[in-house]
Length: 417
Image 1 (cartoon, rainbow, N blue to C red):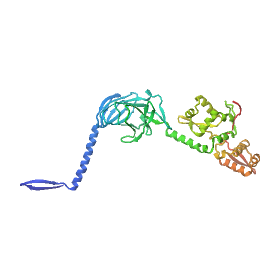
Image 2: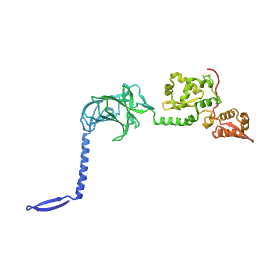
Image 3: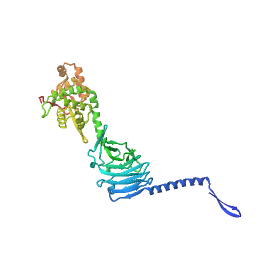
Image 4: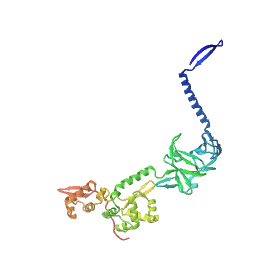
């Protein structure tokens, strides 16, 4: 800044001239001042109301900024709107740790009533399904929103917090009498805190909304994927008819059972055949889905599943809260054989001979089956590679023995039902 004394009309006057550098500093100073003032205004506008109980009637002015209502038991509702709202909030006293934001954009002033109630006070079923996706209500509450007129744009946010059972993968859902619960498009936002957010456009005058968690958590999903992948190659290689032949060709000695069926009786029953087909088509299928697709009664389905498990045709695993079923390969006499070999009747016959005659040798097997030595050696080498058979030298002879633990010998008692 340049300062000079000048004489004008016989008097001395002080003259100031701002340099370019001073003008630049003044410009930045004005920006900082404007930003500070805007923050002060916003801070003033963020009105907070502390309520001892669970209910309030209030008026929220348009463009007033965020109005925060702090209720008992750490319930916090924040509302912002571009129009004036005649507001009523009622929270059930059993609910706690609810942190919700409502951002409203509309053309006209509105009257708004928000009720937060325990889920079971209106809804009995906590689960719903959309396509292949299943959801479960773990938030344990729902919102009922009553408006005297449709709202152009209603944005709902719930803070991601374990205390209120809300995770980043959860979804806002909307209930209607016609369609039941339907998932709303939900995204994770991070304005102040991480939250799940949805937007309802041109809303009805009465809304029921809640937060639902995907019923298949990530660990269960991974487990089911592993189960499916484990059997994918099996299902591709084995047709349904080949699987049945595979079951029939096993040598089995079985423990006592209440069932007195031949393996043919087990496989030829129409209901059990349907169950086998479903499990072959959908490894990892769970009980309720089998119940739905077979249309059997629960008791009847349990009976047929028990027969199939007893005869080692299917297996089951507990994964999370589900019992899932799959083709029985894990503890099968052929469990460690390359699946392509399991399709070979010769492989099955050779394994059966070794199981029945531990210490036998390749030449003897070749004579029994009337096959050349190279063919027998090929199959025996595969059995050895898959650790189902081992060679023990006895002088000049190479004797063949089944590997205990890798082969489960089960004797299926044949009889009539």
